[in-house]
View 1 (cartoon, rainbow, N blue to C red):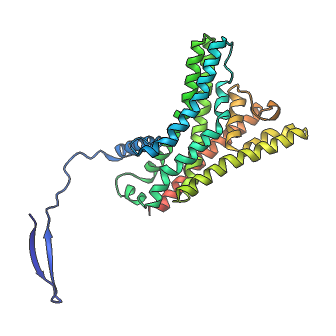
View 2: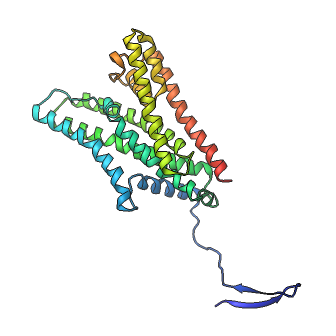
View 3: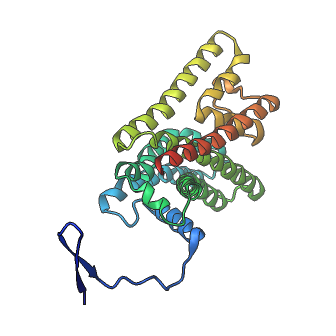
Length: 302
């Protein structure tokens, strides 16, 4: 029970001190690593609406199904027709479905960070043992993992279907591994860009619109410029134009080093020398995204 002790202040006003029996915590202190893992797992679950309302699950689950259904149809056709190869290479699938991937990033990146900014809960995270780097790494890793699951699942469907269709095991395994490497790079790049853009505004709607604009407009502009360069027989400039869009950047890396067929006009992808530039730009964008997020949340957490 609370014990009241009346105290007479020098001014003559009477105040009361209430002893409500606060006790110190004597249990285990799990530290930063546990907090970081918890934030990662909760953010990853939130990227698919798990642990949230049914309404929050609809869009991410729908997009996941949309990503996998074409792969299942391709597998069914390959098995039924006894085809010698799959209709789409493993490395091409994510490029073909890039609109769905962009929509997923646009919907989930703001969900991951905008609410914390809007309701000003970020300083509460940093009042615990967790630090800025822990928060940024957990959010970055969670969205990248969610994207990898989204893009790798249809590749797994294609791979299982190819084995059921009795296609060459060695070729299919090699193609599957190349596809996984490609979507891993795509997941890191898209997660970093999406989080940076979403962290600039606490309004989720603005974040969604901004992410869609950056990913789709850049791809449309680069594709248009490449088509113009191809029409004017300026094929040497096509690979360099591809550096200015996240989708074409990943396309250039995989066509240069993973044996993929380029989606650039005329199928002219970057050479190995140009591909080195693509890799450096891609890794630089991932590192820059992480650095910008760190700077952003250092200011927010003050």
